[in-house]
Image 1 (cartoon, rainbow, N blue to C red):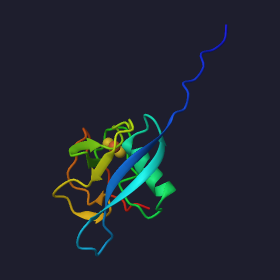
Image 2 (cartoon, rainbow, N blue to C red; image 1 turned 45 degrees about the vertical axis):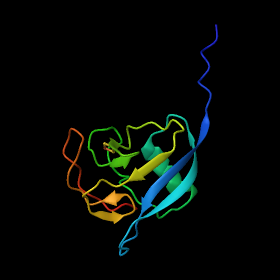
Image 3 (tube, rainbow, N blue to C red; image 1 turned 180 degrees about the vertical axis):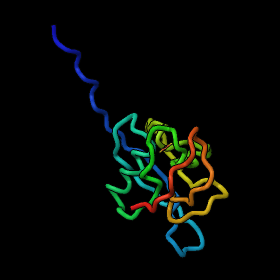
Image 4 (cartoon, helix red, strand yellow; image 1 turned 45 degrees about the horizontal axis):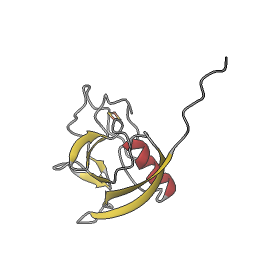
Length: 128
Ligand code: FES
């Protein structure tokens, strides 16, 4: 009797629009990417893929729990406030924005203040 075969790896191309804003810029601008990523990856994985595939300066809260506990990865995803480390990529087009009312440091990286997770936020660190 043979072991069950692993589920085949399925690569998707996802249309993603993200808010970009460099320090010193007055207004954000939308930037669109076609990102190749494995189905069922998280939106946080998608943000890493944008950084890896297109722009190494793309900034977001990257150094936190990745388990849905700290709330540091909270973003607006298609108009809803969601934890990027918990939302799965299905192939649907995505529009990703910082949370309203939060000070944007760069792109999707916001000043730490509120949280939507169950534990206190970790100390804010500058994204690499
Ligand atoms: S990184 Fe998503 S909740 Fe902590």
